[in-house]
Image (cartoon, rainbow, N blue to C red; front, side, top):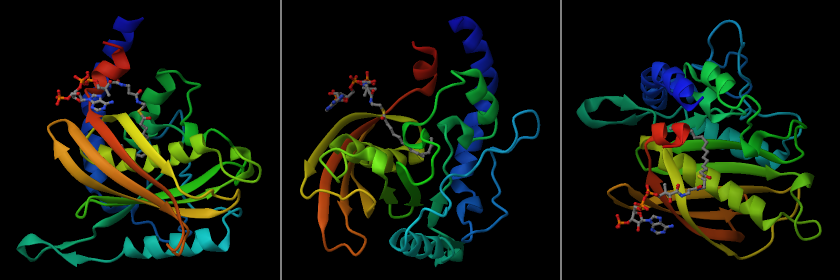
Length: 252
Ligand SMILES: CCCCCCCCCCCCCCCC(=O)SCCNC(=O)CCNC(=O)[C@H](O)C(C)(C)COP(=O)(O)OP(=O)(O)OC[C@H]1O[C@@H](n2cnc3c(N)ncnc32)[C@H](O)[C@@H]1OP(=O)(O)O
């Protein structure tokens, strides 16, 4: 089984790697608000169809979530001067699917082959608004990732408030997205200080930056605040280690 999977995977590996690298540089993520024409590189024709981008607004998004989305989405259209007089758009919205492998060309097929029932933890509840509603924005120039999150009623920990494990998930996702800018990583360490509880249904902003790199290690810090930044909910530091995705998938 492992050998068979290895053969399937190695056939796609190069394609996936190249397309992930290409996708991080491609301006496709600058999707205008409510644009019906979301171009997705994960879109291959038959037989699996087009994956749905779950990072776009839906009817459950409240005014604060929409305001933040519009703010960061508008940053995704701002060009800045880069080296050699060229223009760059540093902010990109990361499209969200229910599996990570759908991210890249070939991933649609791969994700059907490898544990077809697997779902990304943050996208496994189909009811809109019930759990994690979010969009991630990344600035590769400043090495910064911002997540806007609306936390639904299925994430209760203390009465009426968000579970600490759900907050850890949010932090792991935002810092993990930033850490994976240059390739596959795993979380080695997550250190969280919970400063003030988050009410269910509320929207929060999660900002993360790279503090330091040492070989395979990336040290990232993160804070979770209210939308206007006045209330600090959570602070965290994370250590990510770059990994060989082959080893992860093939269990070597
Ligand atoms: C591609 C683009 C896609 C973009 C699209 C993104 C969209 C959406 C993003 C969603 C993002 C979700 C992000 C979820 C991310 C998870 O949730 S990952 C799941 C949770 N994590 C795990 O299960 C990891 C389990 N642990 C492991 O697999 C292994 O321990 C690790 C972390 C891979 C490290 O193992 P290793 O590679 O063998 O490394 P090892 O030799 O042990 O250590 C190397 C160095 O790191 C140090 N180290 C290792 N562990 C630790 C530790 N815990 N503390 C301190 N130091 C440590 C060692 O001391 C050593 O240091 P030096 O001696 O070199 O100075």
